[in-house]
Length: 261
Image (cartoon, rainbow, N blue to C red; front, side, top):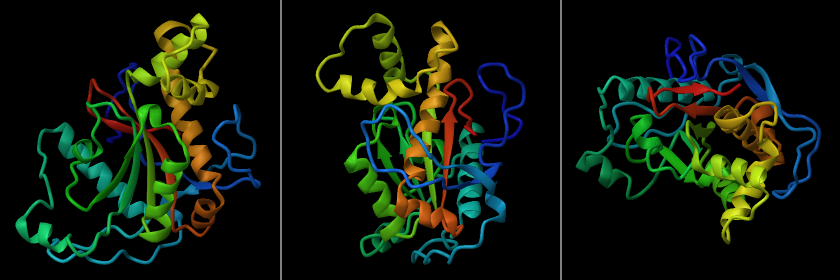
């Protein structure tokens, strides 16, 4: 999450995870989860910090401060939480009896995190957030299907969440399986092949061995982010500055989250 966090690949200072341009949308894209390439995918445009402010999210009773209500505020809160996680100074916020009681009647999460099922990358821990803070959706390799799209859309359209983060991670087993299956020409068991089919368009054929797997982790994050940003209902929110959809990556070796631009 910090600009002074080197990536595990030794590329020097990693960029701040949430610095950079805000997403804009391209031309109309027909919804599909089985296509092997995207056309007209949304890309990052003007900076998130310059997005038009959104209406602040409602304050959950019992919390110390209102929820982040804009993409920039949500990004800043996640960055701060990851810094605490990396420094072993977690606060484990929003777990008190008062907050648990308050959350029985309403929820106002400030970010949707679409992450991998990997047991080493639980979003609430790596971002040091508590009850009612994040809406998390987890699938192997961040793979999309209609249930995942509906879950993300629910958070944004029904709950007014201003930020969606697609969170990949170092040493992703689903990505490795997809790369190795393509290289061997073999079929994976049962439903696991579906995951590989969804990841395969992101495979980076410009690299070999472990470098290919590592590069494909980033490419897969970009692909999933682009698919989400191409959804018309989400794109409309992005265009008005009320929503940002960003890609990020968690490094197991450093515990840092950084932006995948």
